Amino acid sequence: MRASGDQLGPNAASILASEHWSLIATRSLIWNEAMSRATVFLTVLSASIIALALVANATGFGSETRTFGLVLLPVVLLLGIATHIRLIQINTEEFQLVVAMNRLRHGYLTIEPGLKPYFTTGQHDDEAGLVTTYMLEKPTQARLWLHFLVNTPTIVGTVDAALATVIVVLLGQAADVSRGFVVAWGLAAFVAVWGVLLARQRSTLRPVRHTTPRFPTSADRG
Image 1 (cartoon, rainbow, N blue to C red):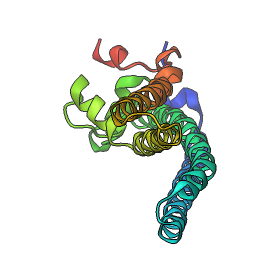
Image 2: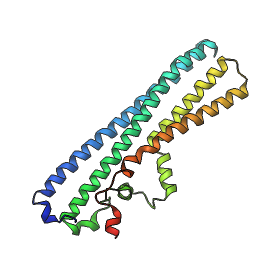
Image 3: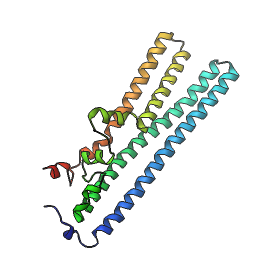
Image 4: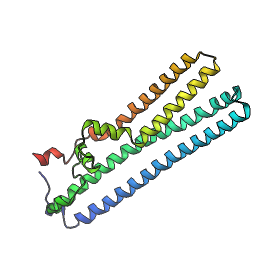
């Protein structure tokens, strides 16, 4: 049985609004952290590339350059992987916060049902409501995959895969392996790292999909 506006009580709107502002503030904080982490990683990466270029210029691209790269780049890769994992966690938290705000909007509409035509974002705490809040036009599977492939964790993961490729190539050159094997190993490293990171990233929506919604979209459609 659904609650009516009267059953929620006279102070329901102000209480829901207070909770809504708390969720908005939390959402702002985690996105500030996401941008800061991505910026730190890219700054360290840029500084490392400049340092590597200066060493290469000073040593004539010799074995010293390779050694310096094999010492420096794994540290940058570790930072990149840590950044990627934290960005995935932030995206998961973001989705949970959006679902929570959808639930609050459902409460607003319980109090004032006549406001429904004026709401653009979702009012249901399921995956369909989440997609509505993000205002994805015609959310087909292909469009959802495109949205998934262009977000920040994917970009960081791609940079991580490229870093892993460079490290493998440097290792191959240090071992005096033929160019064909070096290229093959580099491609394999890129695909392996990129695939593992994206497989981990696919778990972002798991908390939403594995939680029973209190106000599912299908209930209103039915």
